[in-house]
Length: 444
Image (cartoon, rainbow, N blue to C red; front, side, top):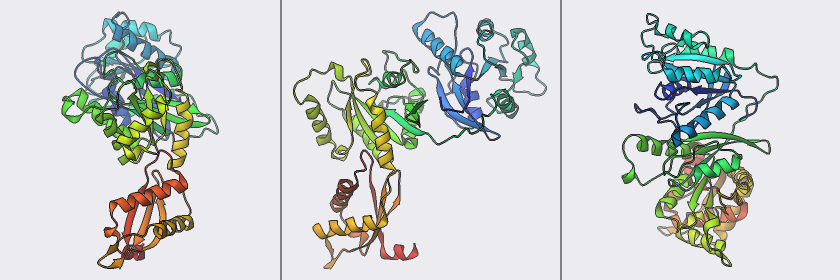
């Protein structure tokens, strides 16, 4: 977890409103909420803030201590891991149904957890008149805190109690912005396994069933002093194949994960030719301005001959020329082959994405490129570039002022982009070029 920031885990049996409470405490819809029990399977991390204090909030799958079903066992391991890593536990129970036998079993586990516990009685909608939460004293975990996550009643009081239960702030703690890395790709290409291998532990639920990851799961990692947050996204499918309900929201969250990411890792099954859907995912990340790295996963299953990796990469970039400067790594989440190399490449691509070039250098290169291949004429008059500057980073954005900006064809813009990349690299990062008129330069 991120150094200096405490962690609060929300736990409880299925369908007591943990994800609704998670969303309420965050003030946004980050977790999938559905009437069916068992919707949340992984631990879902998010950074929360209340009265100036930040903490990681963790939404966990429903805990069924005595269940022997494979998925229930996997969820139990995730919840137990969340308990170990957390500084405070929010044990959520259902105020409408009253104490449940599973609640007593969970309470017994929590009494040996060596962590402070807040007992949260959810679905108490008629506060302050409703006294249903009093029944939960018999769990033996202290005073029950009533709340209605659905309508927000007493959520502020609960957040006050959370802040009071956190460890004291240590002097000199810094909270630098993390680097968000979205792991994207089609369902069942090994995204969760890849992150687990990177972390050296089973942080995410892995199953042979495609689509096990439904939410976009944030998993922090500290590497060489840089705070990385890996986002394991639900697999993206073609829009026509996305069903209503859970799959729709999972796809929506994957799109948002790409939109907020700094770098995207596109995992492709290397045992087959990259399908169109993989290439569309790459284009989504590129259009969003993310740095991009292609990871050919399951490389241990590919029959090797001389130049196999070179030919695979060449075929990919031949199909999608825009990926010509995107790093390609050949790895195996199953064996761990080359998996950890991705961390250094992530940092390299992230640095390239925020690299800034001096205005003088930008103008010199634009002039050099225009002298080598002059821009076309418009109605007999030459198109001239008047001034250029890098207006933004993340991604690098070059603004060029011209006398006829709308008459510069797309193929010439590509020529300029390739020239910029040849000079400054910008490895794995899209370069945006904005053409503006002389009048816009004067207004600026």
